[in-house]
Amino acid sequence: MPEVTLLAYERVESKIEALIQKGTLRPGDRVPSVRELCRREGVSKITAMQALSNLEAKSLVQARPRSGFFVQSLSRLPLPQSPEIAAEPREPCLSDDVARVFRDIQKPDTIPLGAGTPDVTLLPTAEIARCVARAARLHATQFGGYSMCDTDLALRREIALRLSRSGGEVSPEEIIITNGCMDALNLSLRAVANPGDTILVETPTYFGLLQMIESLGMKAIGVPATCDEGIDLHAFEGTLKSHRIAASVLIPSFGNPHGANLSPQRRQAVVDISRKRGVPVIEDDIYGELGFGSEQPRPLRTMNHSANVILCGSLSKSLSPALRVGWAIAGRHAENVRRLKWISSITTPHVTALAAADYLRAGGFDRHLRALRKTLETQICRISNAIAKSFPQGTCLSRPAGGYFLWVELPWRIDSMKLRDAAIKHNISICPGPIFSLEGEFGHFLRLNCALRLDDKVTQAIETLGRLAHGLNSPTRS
Image 1 (tube, rainbow, N blue to C red):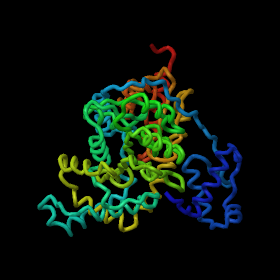
Image 2 (image 1 turned 45 degrees about the horizontal axis):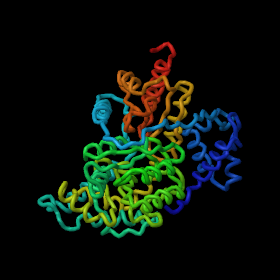
Image 3 (image 1 turned 30 degrees about the vertical axis):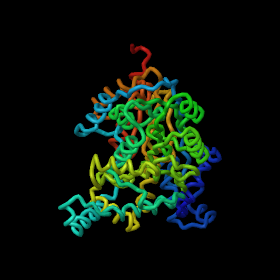
Image 4 (image 1 turned 120 degrees about the vertical axis):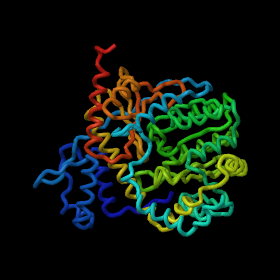
């Protein structure tokens, strides 16, 4: 996606943060004063104060009365390391463990550190409600039928326009509206593969993808992925070469759970390797617009020679889970995807499609995204700092540049399934690592959601989780 012009306070904030991250400004150092920032950067006092306030919210600096702002100690933990994984096709079997996660989340007063949904306070719910009400009022007669006409054309146009900003020339006719991203992924997978076929996935990967493969009677094979670089390209190509793979399902932008964002070079390599082997790629791009930098990642579908990539996206993580608005851009598989959509759901829920189009057309989505990205970045910084202070020595932590999640590697003694059982007794839900893999690897890992309302309850929950982890890490435990 083309570079976005930073606001003045964001420019100042980024400069100071870069000095801290590079070690030019070290813990205890005084950062430039408001007056100095105004003079040096040519900004107003309000702008300078906004930049410093944002850095304070990220726990990077601390205000001292009548003294100014000072750099806080950076508790940067090492990156998690992926264990060795078995690279053989097998049928996923996760349903019971995943169902337990959802049962935990739904318990009253539970703090949903294991959820994958945004807190309602992070979303423009009032504006969405007005758009839905307006769509229902203006198109009331469409409640009487399946609405086989192009009622979702306006939405497809808005999606095509957004994709064009990232270099993807897509016409509205190529876009198939679905009931969220999971529906798009399901339809796409069924369009290119059959029961018994083997699907390549990253390891770790989103448990919902593994459940989907399981439900379709297919097998999966895992390829290692790391928090910094994403999927192992050598293993990716080797697996495509040595096994009969029907399709790959990948999350190249801020992967769930590891948070990695593939570089442009690695994105092109994935496309080229897949094209060489004749294997379609189904791209889950649900977090693609939630990057914290000034430039958002380009979907694989916009890279050179990407005709074999099926792009799946959604508004569920960026705007509203309840709208259930997703899409698939399936290229030569489009007619098959449309046929499968007709079989499974006949048509698009037209009122929500019209409401989503109305919201996107009104121009407020980019403002909302800017605020949401900033909030997520701040909360990931604060929660990372809290983990560093509360969790046992030997804990490792991802450093995502976008998305919702932190991927936590605990000391080897700590069984994340046991930690989950202990945490829920304190009304805290987490996602244990084994549900993100085929063979139950990542037994001492967990995923934490940062798209929360970050209040004292959440902070206390992280501290409690740390205490529980300390208890499980005791060498006297069997």
